[in-house]
Image 1 (spheres, helix red, strand yellow):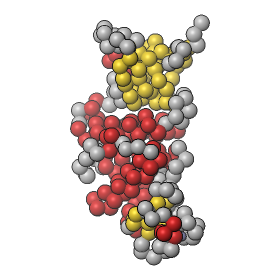
Image 2 (cartoon, rainbow, N blue to C red):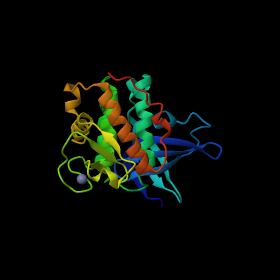
Image 3 (cartoon, rainbow, N blue to C red):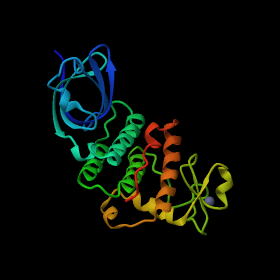
Image 4 (cartoon, rainbow, N blue to C red):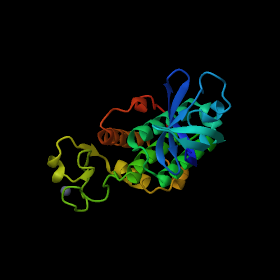
Length: 250
Ligand SMILES: [Zn+2]
């Protein structure tokens, strides 16, 4: 008798498997990222297929096969239609789910991160603004959930409070370097005081401030660059959808 499981999950990846099957990558509330086999989803207009579209949040019924979970029941809870019909928001979908598909380990529960992602998607679904800022918020907090939060308060070299006007960000050392310690990582890049302030705000896990805040685009672009390089450093490979997140800043 196969064991039966029930959980909520967001579909973050999909690929063909054999003739008619698909393997879905699902970020679940209870089991973290898992691979799920959906049988016959391509061939016949399976009843489940509509529920198992990319980015949907779904109630899943699963049994455990030899190599994968197999989906035996699915009911979409949220299909995020407003996001799917908007180009900028859809690119945000691709970008966030690509990061998660790459950064999450299989079968390692991340329930708080799951709820965080659902909150980000719900915000994107309801409002069509500040998408760029929301992406920055997502990037830094995902790193935090997974134990890679950059040090933004003290210098990672001397552990002193940072002073002066010139700071550096080191991917290798995972945070801010002061002017004195900058030579400990010759690849560190300068970061402005305003960009550092914004990054500190973004790791707060509370995005109500996003509603109120108005930030110059040169500052958000600076943070985007720093986040992007740091994420790639952590992932050890280039993110495919990073280049096509060319979301207009509103
Ligand atoms: Zn230092």
